[in-house]
Image (cartoon, rainbow, N blue to C red; front, side, top):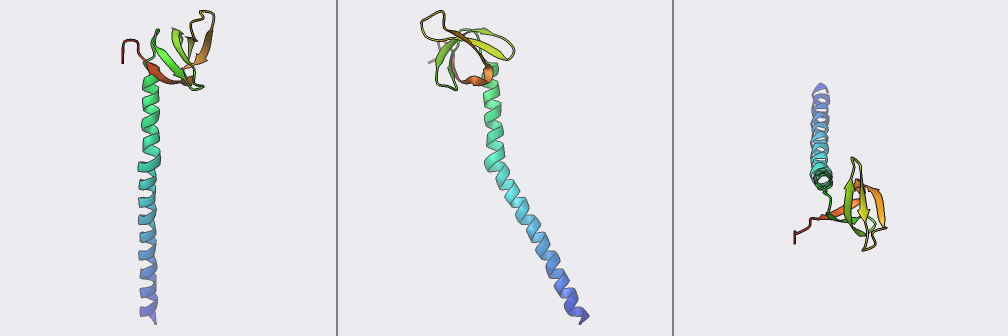
Length: 104
């Protein structure tokens, strides 16, 4: 009888190791398909926002195009349209896209 118990215990230990391997593979897949691309996108957005300069044309997250006329640490002042009176301060995080003058 003791031989049968030992064989059953060995099988449960091997099954537990298999579960650990499966969880490790699932976490690895989760990392490469979800976490890693999100971090790359965050780095790209941060670099883009840090490269904003006065005179750049920006597209805001709300869909408006404007020209940056002043920059502070966390905010920018954007001028919209040809009307010189339409200047709106907004956070840098509200910038979705930047077009440098002279770049095609």
